[in-house]
Image (cartoon, rainbow, N blue to C red; front, side, top):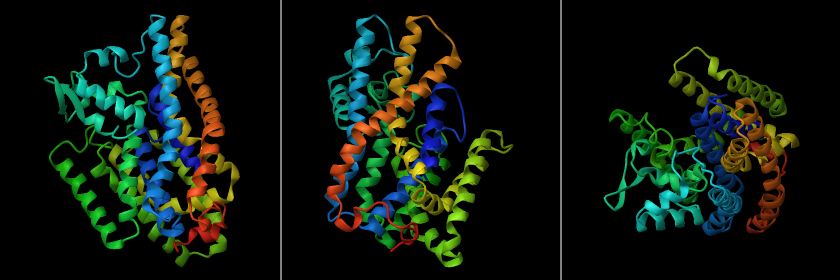
Length: 378
């Protein structure tokens, strides 16, 4: 699973600095949702790793927030340095970060400051604009006069807002079959309704609207709770590692060749999600047996959360020297993102994870159980 997460993170990075690569950014984010659903089901249903719901919330927040706030602080420093040296960062929006706050309403600025400081409600920002001196709903942030998302320090963190929304409901949904299937059917109906009224295939409704996106989290959870049992029932357990390696290789080949498959995008993406749905339990098994796979997976979140500020820094440096080499830009972004993610993992994730481990129940603290035991649901 680690190599898949690493590939998805790099897909998002390449999508922002070099164009469409591998499965594309939208598919990558939604596959992340599926993986998250699988892992949360494992934690809550199989491991039962936390005594209380609050412990679960605290653990997940500690997983996301420390790296986020460090990257947000670095980004604020980069913006301040650029302003002091007379340079402008216009990568995402074509608008100066400080000018947006100067021209915004007080209510909008309070909302943005709160969201930037806490990480909460960042996905909602994509559905808001400043209109007539107050906050207003917008169905298309790309056509807004003053879209709030331009005031986010870590723009890609909107997806963490979607994740947090899932975490809030997960303890009450995943362990209870009736509620689980009600949410699953509800998410399908919401997505179908959005498509029917003509907005379901347009950004931000395609992969940023939580009531519809919870479908992918639940599909990942379904894969953990039911596809896992299917594998255990119909395959010899001793052959699982070999099957897992084969499936992982297949996923990597499909991901690499995805842009060149001669089919309509919705056909390709449906096929891709179907493959991921059935491969997730085997990818989990593969990760448990391969240290290098887990280490690659550990870098996926730091890569995802720091790559935009790396793009800012690289663009400022290249702009200062009037260098316009696209290849050099891509190489620098990839190299510095990887280096930065390694530092973030070493100096933030590892120390924080020691504290997070104390929150789990004793029986769940050993994250390196036998793969065969992890493959079972209960």
